[in-house]
Length: 146
View 1: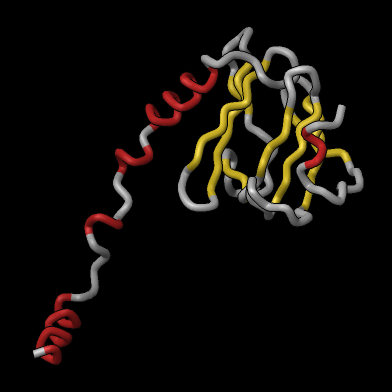
View 2 (view 1 turned 90 degrees about the vertical axis):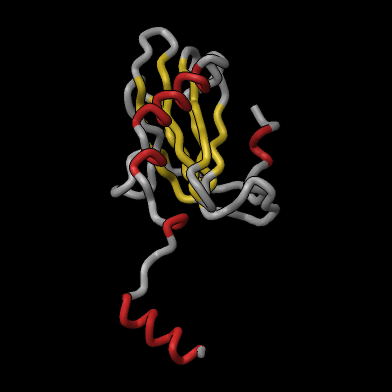
């Protein structure tokens, strides 16, 4: 019986179950617009009058946008993958309203206590410039530091 079932599967060709196939409605423009709009409602949290909005997009996938609270213009956060404008690989972004510095911890999780790669970016008003600095031993200890 299992042999016959195997032959039938081969003859019909293997297909991805319908529930696993991506569908257009999962990636609608409205969804991203809604995520950004609702995140921006909380008000500025970065570099004076900007709001960093973050949301998940699956396992080990995070997306973000930066919204100018004065103009509504949307900017791309610092990215690490040239092929993915709004995604960054398992990063934890650190930022404050009273600073133009954004620290991105790469290859670690929010609950990690091990050292992870840190990248430092300065917001220039319409783009980020990466600066080179030595990472701290405790990757997330800079939250309490001025």
